[in-house]
Length: 237
Ligand SMILES: [Zn+2]
Ligand SMILES: [Zn+2]
Image 1 (tube, rainbow, N blue to C red):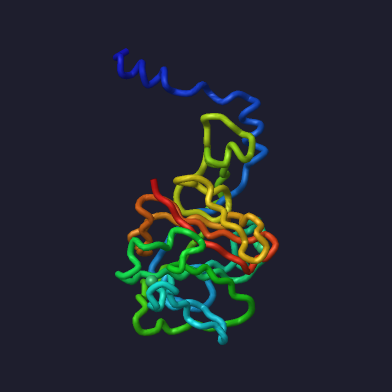
Image 2 (tube, rainbow, N blue to C red; image 1 turned 90 degrees about the vertical axis):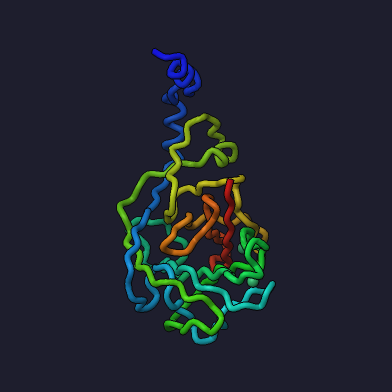
């Protein structure tokens, strides 16, 4: 055995004990990954890009910092999530983000930043034409993949009382499960009641969708009591 190999073995944490595994099992949640395929937008289906599904009375979101019409990034139909997925109260989440040169690097990573908006729609709407000045991203349809068992990220171990070096946290884009944090837990407070929001779905860098989180992750969050109150934030290492 070479010395280098011996070092690797020495640095590897001890295998998780039965007690650790049992506590992790208590925290098991299911998450769903998805695959993307180019397609035509038809309505409120979960997808990336294309024209958003918006209510008749909704105004197109404008960046409060630079005044540019935001780009529509994705929507998630909480009434048509995979079977046995957690109940987030239904409705249609739409995520908008400012892509103007002026705002590049100026914000958008925090839920309170003016460069991003995650908005809930209740009731009916229609496809909305993308206004002049807003970037139209290619429409990509979502196909849900089989469910996967997910466990808390290391940053959530402290909160959950699970301290151990083993994570079993699912990386990459996913719906539900446990978030993968880059700089620490980012669950914003509900602007209506101050309650800590819960994680709903995770986005990662993707050339097809145009997302760039610097190799980090982005999260849509929701108030458990005011399910119309949504947040979006991202972080990278
Ligand atoms: Zn802007
Ligand atoms: Zn609330």
